[in-house]
Amino acid sequence: LNGVVPYPLWLNGGPSKILEIPTTVPTDILLYNQLHQLPPRQRGDVMLQVQIARTERLRAIGAVISIVTHPEKGISERPDFLNVYDQYLAYIRSATDIWFPTAGEFFSYWTGLQAPVAQPASSDVLQAEAMAQ
Image 1 (cartoon, rainbow, N blue to C red):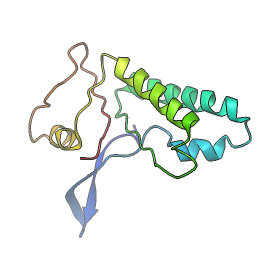
Image 2: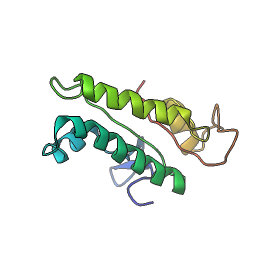
Image 3: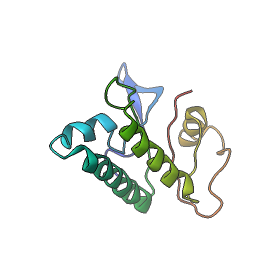
Image 4: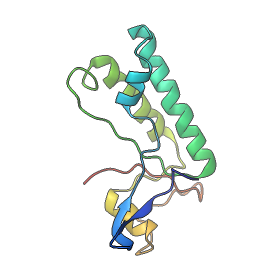
């Protein structure tokens, strides 16, 4: 689980109250740069396949699903990229074993401060989409 588990940031030689939630699904800009050699029509399909494959691996081990997208002019705002993002979010939302907490809810759960607001009913697998509030 190295690299996919949240951890407290260290300050002054000890853990702080800041929880680092690593990005676990490849970002759109990372994929864009890696797939620049593909024709534009294929790029979106491959980006979606990569994101779904990574998400499936994370779900299989019960890891956190954390996605980040950057609204960069000429990249993420492009209709083909928005289409990929919409399809990916629809895929994620269709999963019944994924919990979608706010960043505050996730922090509270992970640090043991309180029980989660809405755990998945169908599974004890915890996965989360970290969302900034």
